[in-house]
Length: 389
Image (cartoon, rainbow, N blue to C red; front, side, top):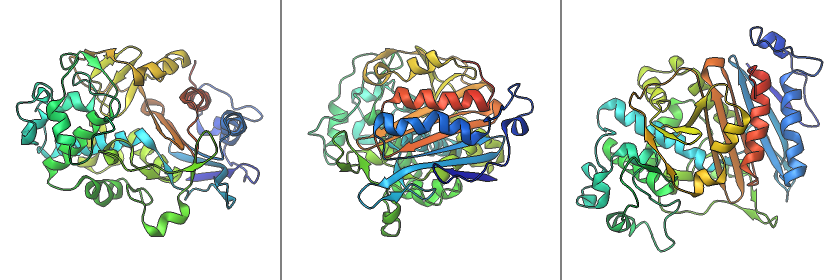
């Protein structure tokens, strides 16, 4: 069941948290319904950070709550709705990871193989020392955050052939679009199809995502929000090398909440899809305050806000960090998963705690500080999941 509430014209939310979470150990209070909690955490961000429009989805014990604020387009005063398409930036990497995990489930891909097993053009390069697991977890040895500007689709493989590592595979995590992008490219090669076709034609429909795209079709353009830069100029993402794999997904708050719920309750999915989703929850490398999995970053399920902020600090994305492999790679069963995403004009954040059946996703059409996103989402989850922080 979905409860929808829009700032300024909100319908009443029927259930309080006391009803939703009788075992959470937290009384709802006079304004303890989900609408009030989300309003308090997110509505102030619009004015504070100059955000034209924002949508928030919360899932608690299988019940959805969606809030829409502000405008998808300032120029024509189009309000944000559950059908508004936002760019989700690097949150796209979690779909790439899920597709790669599906290839694992078919036996057509192994995380222990080098990328040259699937892309012979890379044979004999430094990347032959790395595995697909290293690519998927940004631990191949120092691939950069972005491709150099001179790299094009036509010269990409030459760039990877010439690349030289700064560290041995598995020793350093350096967050990298080329790294996860190559992993997604290899996964599609292993499955024998185009990456975009696999996501839009297979994975998104399997997940029940009806309004999620890499290339927004003409019929959905009216719902595609404009992003806004620091100067207020409206923006949309530009094409780039391996952009689909790293940051190219556009989606609605309704679809992204469905994706969060698929990760909260993978046991409800078809067997092969369940196997793929659960594979993205496996921990692989300890990196300072976080544990890196396939796409998702992990913490203990009662993660304090300070640790969550440290794991999402700029240094974690911009600077190499020591990595330590986890010997027994199995889901802990009690973890907090999250991922941020940004393009020049958009911001996204998703987090979920399967053991508490609670999750949240936020989409906005301005790229505002990650710290503010994390603080607001943590404040909501702290209330609805009875966490301490």
